[in-house]
View (tube, one colour):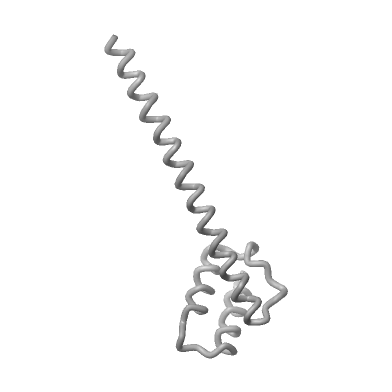
Length: 89
């Protein structure tokens, strides 16, 4: 009986861990999609039409978002910085 209870406890722990991991992956995927969408919108505003944000790495997307979030830069400087980040692909 003790072995049965231990097996049930282990199975329950493993199945809840798998569900938690799946939820984490879904949240990360959703977050990445939102970042790609935000960058795509900014690309349109900057006139960058030949780059698909989905082709960029997470690091590049984060760097671009950081540049675009800076209120101290003018639009031309932002565009140059974004293009430099894209070129590092």
